[in-house]
Amino acid sequence: MADINATNAGQFKFSDQFTVNRLGFGTMQLTGKGVWGPYADPDRAIAVIHRAIDLGVNFFDTADSYGPWYADRYLAAGLKGAANRDQLFISDKVGQTRQGPGLWVPLGAPHYLRQQVEVSLMTLGIDHEDLLFLHRVDSHYSIAEQVGELQKMKDEGKIRHIGLSQVTLDQVKEAQKYAHIDAIENMYNVADHHDDPLVDYAEDQHMAFVPWFPLNTGKLTGSDSPLEGIAQKYNVSPAQIALAWLLKRSPNILPIPGTSSLDHLADNIAAANVQLSDEDFDALSHLSK
Ligand SMILES: NC(=O)c1ccc[n+]([C@@H]2O[C@H](COP(=O)([O-])OP(=O)(O)OC[C@H]3O[C@@H](n4cnc5c(N)ncnc54)[C@H](OP(=O)(O)O)[C@@H]3O)[C@@H](O)[C@H]2O)c1
Image (cartoon, helix red, strand yellow):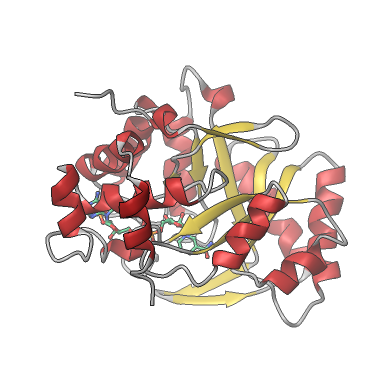
């Protein structure tokens, strides 16, 4: 059986040579219901991070709004003391406030974005953000104000790379006037890839494209998945087909499937070993609504 390791997914190199394995991990499942409160079994949450490291994951997507703060605490605990800690990277996000389960209200006030970065550096136990996304553009503030504040913090050494989350192509182009944009994180998966033009733009501009909901929140997994037929043909799980499609779609795509299950984690990382034929890739590409 092929080795299960995220390095098998290949690597993405940012323009300054910062390099990550293309199959990462998203921490949002390591919280309570509605992405609110602690995860029911904190030891397991930390065990999932440890196993991800063992499986070669070196790109962890998180945000203070997950919990809030709980996912960051588990991530910090899981990364702490890792033998290869200096080769493990975090992508973080600012610009969201939380009021309860399922409630998210963007806030792009520059002083709040700065506060979030400062508090996240403490929570995560790091001295700079490897990659920091503006989680949402807040229409109450200009893009110049929001991205400009991130650029100031980059100039101060608190942030290495700046990204934008859930944005339009026009917003990306506007933001590029105020900062070098290294990454986009938008909802994108084999069943919903209406953001194809953004993926193409990211590839053209040498930005990473981090698709959130890569498994369509789990709807692409399981025996009732629309990917079940092709999964049987390859003798793999539907989740692996969903991730293999993303990895083949563009060399700039860095999927970050989320799970609180050790078995699902290994299943997802094994997707790095699945090579879809061009014919099957094209057939799957027509699934999107
Ligand atoms: N930028 C943004 O606005 C934004 C928004 C949403 C999410 N995100 C990021 O994207 C990451 C991924 O999104 P997500 O976790 O919400 O959704 P997802 O990765 O599309 O799906 C996660 C769901 O699939 C299940 N699952 C995972 N692997 C599985 C497998 N191999 N077999 C069967 N079920 C499996 C999980 O349940 P189990 O726990 O039982 O495995 C969970 O219910 C998040 O963790 C977060 O970091 C970013």
